[in-house]
Image 1 (cartoon, rainbow, N blue to C red):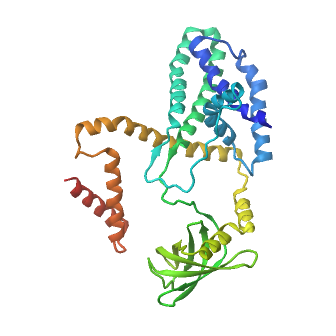
Image 2 (tube, rainbow, N blue to C red):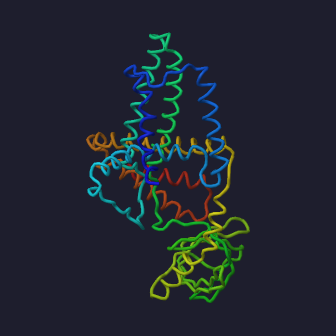
Image 3 (cartoon, rainbow, N blue to C red):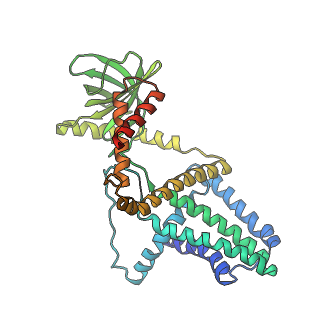
Length: 367
């Protein structure tokens, strides 16, 4: 139903209601703590458990609250604009096949940060009303707990707008199956297991006797769940040896229309693979475990997001100080380049040596 998209209005009310009381003394929700514990709290807990029982395989606990809170601040203006002028709004298509060269915070995060700071500013007002209005302490307790829950949701929303760097233009997904590899130069061959797959390449796992090296051109002989066979050209991107196992990544080489047809047919034409992928994800988790996972991921992302915001605010000062005539982001990119160079030239060294070489090279660059 199209009425579903009005959830943004309800979410905004849930966020603003405790602020209206703590800031302005508006009594939106008049109830005592015993009344809330007797009626509202059992209803809230039972609704969480029933939702997890019915939809736990498809959506983990608190994900709906997190999803709707993150969208509400942007959805309300869009819904109201459609009601006012149904033909005026336009739909913008999200760009596809792009990569992110560095970590950054999305511009969509700033309104969420403003709402988070407004809720955070209400905490001193809650303390003030606790001491100034003893008869309203039940309402203060309810609004403060309500406010704390909204602060947690907004913190997780801020974590979601922190964009991590993504070098792959086509994200890889889990896959299964066997693959035969033949070298176009040496004629060597090997059998391996498919681990992940994307439109741009494939990850495999093989035994220790893996005869291929980085940069070598190979043919991948694969078969989908329907028995269709495909021969796809690929280039070895990297080979990692871990004890008795070898993990390698390949980039598909597409030179002709037949190559493109084979890649599309193998990657997207096997519905059984996609069904198994969905079945692997449909795993119900306990209510507290799912909530703990979401909170941990959200708070971690929020810490990174706030750090990026600090860098955005500090960067003009950084340039004014004239540190090497470089921006802070340029310095970070240089550090990443130095680290990559050390990894490429380490020749199988241990982690301690990598750490030492990285900092010595970086300090020598900084002078």
